[in-house]
Amino acid sequence: NSLPAIQHAIDLGVDIIEVDVKVTTDGVVILNHDGTINRTTTGTGNPENYSWAELQNFRLKMPDETVTEERLATFEEALNMVKGKAMIDIDIKTGNLEPVIAAIKKTGTEKQVFFFDNDYYALKEVLTLLPEALIMPRAYSYEMADSALNTFSPPVVHIDDSFYTEELSQLIKGKKARIWINALGEQDDYIRKGQTDKALYNLLKYKANIIQTDEPEILIPLLKSKGQRD
Image (cartoon, rainbow, N blue to C red):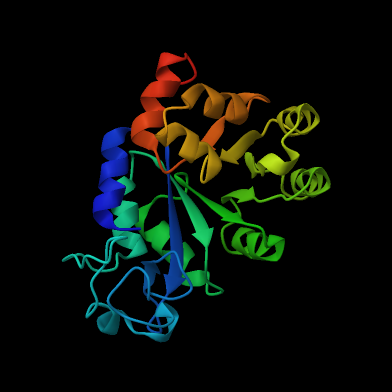
């Protein structure tokens, strides 16, 4: 969720960059993963309780607590940086969606973003505000995936490996949607340890075609070498 990280992802050639959006008290959409800024910045508390000017007093921290010169990024900055270069997956972390939609319209990135949530009411609100929006519902079971497909006719469904089966794959692909699966956690650990064949088998065995990973530097050339990515 920092501008240097986003630029690095672009440089690596990733197809989709995930960001987490929140809205300040004065309506500025900012990027922050957690419910608070405690872990990621020198500040504390819920970023939605601050104004944008107040948030600029804080600096981003590395995982080892090293303080950087970077500040929290705005959603608009991220959209302009990624425009024409990749898709953006918006993880909805706010109940104030109107400023989020406004930033998308301002930057002309309507066809480059899609919205992710397991709250189907939030996704319906997105479609009320931006009827042409692309969405990615999260499902936690075969039945929930079926419901999501029938409710939204989405271009992609986010699933978990706990119910990743041939039957599920046929259901989703039968509706002309893509299958999004996470490498985050166990599969990324296999990738980091060099157990790449095991990770790829687990991720691709039922033909998922979007993989979310913390290791794109390893995974992108690996997929290319296996003929799984152009």
